[in-house]
Image 1 (cartoon, rainbow, N blue to C red):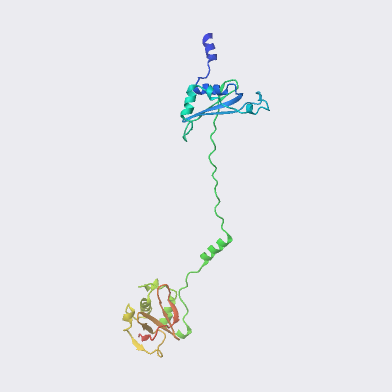
Image 2: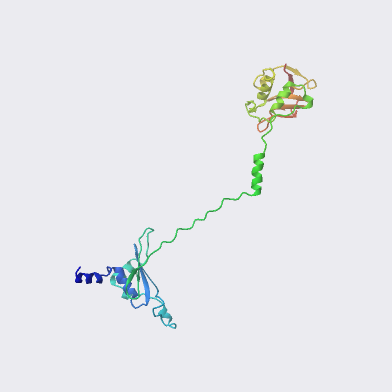
Length: 265
């Protein structure tokens, strides 16, 4: 490399841009450092205090401590840019270039560090209280509905009542005729079938079977019929039947007015 070229190489400086001109103008004579930011929508000019080694303004001169920008000293090109876009709007993905003007007029790049992402705070799972645990344990430990009951002493010896008592607790189901759910005539038909007696499916048809007996002569295992309902006499003024929706097979007192007692052989 020739001496002339080497000299030119040593003398080469950074390219001069409009930012350089503005930054030098702002920094000249201010005794401050200035940062010039170029965004997609305009220019941002900021100044900040020089290092402690530089001369500071007199303590009693308040105005000397203020950093101002003389717009008249800016170039016409910079003034037009500021007036055309007084409000700077920066897109989320805009690229920002920042340069710092030193006291001697040199321009240095300023590194811009993005803000850290927002901190995500994870909330702990709700703690189970002792009351919640007790409620859950009670739900788990709750026994299933008991199916079946003992035969009352006054009905002992009746095969029909012994079979019917097995289904105490089975829910009423309209049209049901199995241990999954019974209606009144489906229950009587199912029970009598297990002792070898076939009954019609409906309560109105069951009225016509067997022999009618008086209430005084009725025995455990006889049918009790009333319009729209049929049950099995259990003795001592009680019956076992499938009452109505929402209820289950149960022993209960005879509630019908003037029912018909039917003995089925």
